Image (cartoon, rainbow, N blue to C red):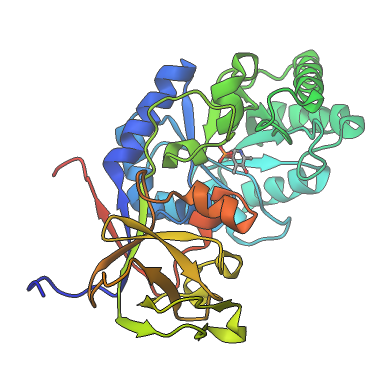
Length: 378
Ligand SMILES: *Cc1c(COP(=O)(O)O)cnc(C)c1O
């Protein structure tokens, strides 16, 4: 065994890959970028990723919750930050307004909450308005839009806020031929017209996430909001052209035990896999308690020493079992669960588990250590 310290399980995030991906997306879209860093930057680490995104030229950072946006400010980020998911009445809205974070209103209740935060912080807000163009999730329904815009304009004239943006979000951008895309684009144009008729002059109008930013030039407007693609994963499998994006996250572990089993040995809980020959098994010390999807049982493939090895039996809370090539594998050998090809990728895991790569990288964590490499000053 080498004298390197033994690491049971760790996530390694390559910030050079994040920077290269952000630059490639800027080149592809020719549009200012918002890099979306919600959910701890899709599991990659909020602050290191935010710094890398800024270094690569991201004009905006996007976060869902107020705490995420405030964590960026508290860490010293002075650039533009948009947040879009607060519950009217949340206390930290006042801090967000005071910190010059752009906050999003979806309803009159949101406007009232922002007005209250402006009173408390004695700072005019930077306010964006979101129109629901067809996702039927967040955003103002088209029937209520003119009313919302009117109130927003009145608040602007009263000095309560400046309306800095109007935006929306796609439902089906990973399916470029889906008819909802054109319908949402048209609904967004209509909403912009209403906003302009009421005198709003937003700094940024934006609609596209990663898939739309890459695939739909008409959806780019003044800003594109890229999440998944900045992490080097494919936002529209089967449709995305090769932009040279590189997965930034590698999830790895070390074999904790290697053993031989005989024909007929049942592996892991429920014996859902039974050896049909004498074989070699390796124990990987991570499980669903660390975000390894239980659906990966008997489906995912891991890389052990450069060989793709199938996961055998069920995923347990702390452990999984792989079948090793005959006679190969030793305690301490490196296992890559997923990373950049030729390793299995998060996309491979997503397909094995019946989910999307977003969920694979965002949920992995638990007792994995986490380490960042490729800092700009290295
Ligand atoms: C998550 C999110 C994005 C980024 O989506 P990707 O598909 O990861 O690029 C953009 N906009 C909003 C509103 C989001 O919630």
